[in-house]
Length: 69
Image (cartoon, rainbow, N blue to C red; front, side, top):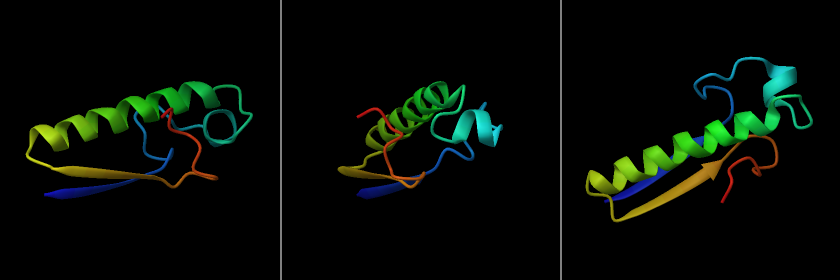
């Protein structure tokens, strides 16, 4: 089973202030990216535990450089 995860900073748990948390250069932007990375990693782990054989993740926020690979 192949899984495709399409993600964005809007919708990450605990992230809700656009200028401070979602915009690059915002005061809490780095923290938001850390939360996004943790959520994506949890989703990927769950997919593999659920039987996935391949997982592809698309970071669709801005330039796609928000997940710590």
